[in-house]
Amino acid sequence: MLLIDGSVPITEQDQRVISMIVESGRALVIAFNKWDLVDEDRRHELGREVDRDLLRVPWAARVNISAKTGRAVQKLVPAMETALESWDKRISTGRLNTWLKEVVAATPPPMRGGRLPRVMFATQAATRPPTFVLFTTGFLEAGYRRFLERKLREEFNFDGSPVRISVRVREKRDRRK
Image (cartoon, rainbow, N blue to C red):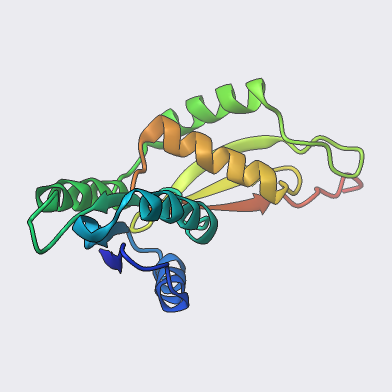
């Protein structure tokens, strides 16, 4: 859980801590404290700061609390439980590949070098954080991997947890043998 003072702008130190959390692959809940001191103008400004400065963690749950008054403190535990469940979630290979075929059929990856890379299958290699490996016939663009990550989150509810996707490109077979 990351506690940020909601009454002042998001600091560079807050962003550094978020970067460390993302790089370590941890589940995350962001608690904005001192909500009792935040007026309407500051709420609007904070919304813009969140959109700008927390772009790397759109998946992190956000809870607005006030430790002084006790406002919304009871929401922290359920948010943490959800994030930890997502962080430890495992998807079966069969279910993952059924979902993947539907998504790729609806939105195929962009062509690269005049060829359409094919996604053959996927598996979940690890949890904590959920890590998926896609086996393909060609390189998948970063934008398409982000698209697949977003669709994974929507389908399997990875709220509060980072999701990592790596791509393994199948080597071309030597046909002359």
